[in-house]
Length: 302
Ligand code: 13P
Ligand code: SF4
Image (tube, rainbow, N blue to C red; front, side, top):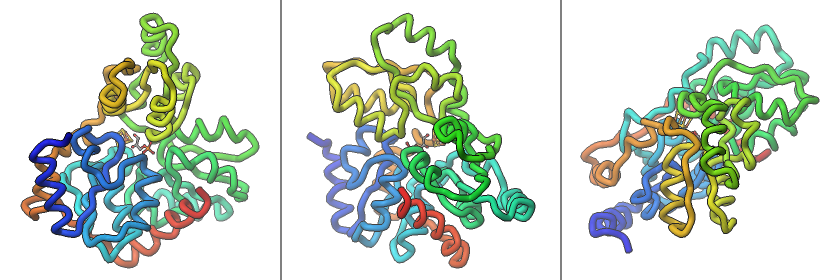
């Protein structure tokens, strides 16, 4: 049963012909009233298909930009303008262009956690759930993977036949987890599997039993009648604990909290619908078209 305030938001969004998209890291109150919830890949695909006037994107800026890139005719609102992903700007478009000039045969693969300006100079985007499938299909003799060195090296280990060059970026939340965290939690819960996001460093991933996107982690836990250790943002452990109270979902490390993903509240969603706050995403027309190509390619290959 949803609260009165949630019901008010649901009514308002119907009146405004708006839908709510929420990344899996959002709070349970937001996920409960979302029209579409899931990982970055699912939200990108939904952005292409949804029929409405307005999309309220609960997540971080690059996700709202992706919706606007794919559905420019819609109003796309980011309820909290400060909600960004620090990884999205860890390499500049100029640096990518320099690399391309020096390596004309290379394909540049951009993790979806990048700015629109970066996507505009890349060949194909990937998400954590689609990266392996997409990179496997690339035929270029050299592949530059930006910006996440951890996801990039995870893919590189799976595809030793590919010549993958990594950038030195990382998610500050996942990158802070250490092998010591795995050893400690295994002492506490020796029989539990550890479900991990591939943004974790390689030396941590070797302790993982299941490695996948936020959606893959949720799906595994929902489908298995067992307790699991959660190796990604704390919200996933909270969500699972609510969905399956008979089970325990201890967090791999206390550091697994993304401040940006935690900024958006129900009140922000309400205010985005009334127009009191939130940012209406505006993108440069030509840059949007250039950024759309790698995202379309991601959806086609993924
Ligand atoms: P997903 O691709 O699993 O949605 O992950 C996005 C993200 O930002 C994880 O930190
Ligand atoms: Fe970015 Fe990491 Fe937060 Fe995901 S968890 S949004 S990659 S900072």
